Length: 502
Ligand code: SF4
Ligand code: SF4
Image (tube, rainbow, N blue to C red; front, side, top):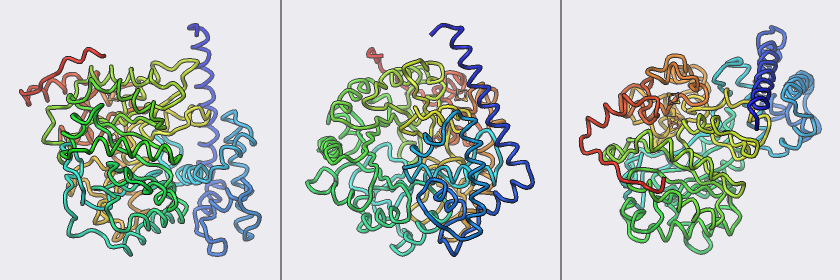
């Protein structure tokens, strides 16, 4: 693409975004529309849903009738959506096609609720977390050296079945779009299938993160799919058994994980393979991508190493900012339409922005989404990109404690409350720590002044785990070399391997 064409495209994109912000800002600031918007947030006892969801269901034809008040409010919501779509250059039919997926409707509902509660802001905050990762149990059948949960045996204060069910109901009612069950190892929880079924019945997109041991067995995948599982994440940490098994502390773990990936692919489940990258397996990543693509997984997710839980003990295996940069560039170029290669490293967005081309439209945000070719999402990168802690994510511990992200250590100053004790919606709206995380202007070091702080902002969990400060610079970025050198000097045993593949 010539420089002239590229500049014209960027200008057009900026113009569209400015128009769109103006329209939504006008709606959010107008007292009459604010009045209507706030009323859509009420729960309707006649229609058994929040009025906003009823309005959206009416708009998208998923519901034929509703109470008088919901029908009146739906006229306002229709107007809002039509203004929004025209500013995005998306037709009503295109929007209706996207919204055939009920989870997109839930997501849109959360976006509109976010405008009502938080206004139009950068970075954007939806009306409820898009995804909650629920660590159901600390029990695990492996002994991973990098485990964020420091898992092993079942904790004493884990919630019982009734309490988990109650927690799921709270989250569904608050507008959470997706639940991802994790652990420990969620498949060894005796009631995991019941929880998946319940979450699915409550209308939430239901995912699970596993080491693959259970799903490697014949007939297991279908049980999960029948219960309503829509997405599975399976961890594979190396190209071969030697690397993976030594990380997982269990012989045969790699074979099981690969078998689980194959079983899930064969069962048509959406499969993400997750790999935490350290000095130990960095050189294996390109061949791993090929292996996993050949098996037929949908996503390959490069997990940023975060020295929390057990991971704190292997801090010295963290890769340098230069290596992370090379790895993410390579990952971006591996997006070939067959399998998406994504990363939880928020710097991936800056690389994508740098490398975006006519043919490759992946605009990774930390809240990763499979369809970046959706024009609405592409134009919103500035609003929705970057670290999702406090904006798109939340995590629940086995005892119901809430944290901004699973990678935050379980320290009292980082705890947001408890799912069953505190008011979940109130925590989301007003918690001081969440509000701090939502402000990218107060970040320190280069992260604060960086042009990319809206689409990246650095990983706040890494900042905290290295510097005991959620606002500190992320030392994993080439722009924060000084901070990286400080860490390296602290751990004199830091040893970089020669990774000639990159
Ligand atoms: S300096 Fe911070 S905000 Fe900028 S790219 Fe690096 S990590 Fe992201
Ligand atoms: S702190 Fe942010 S960037 Fe880091 S893992 Fe959590 S959500 Fe992702």
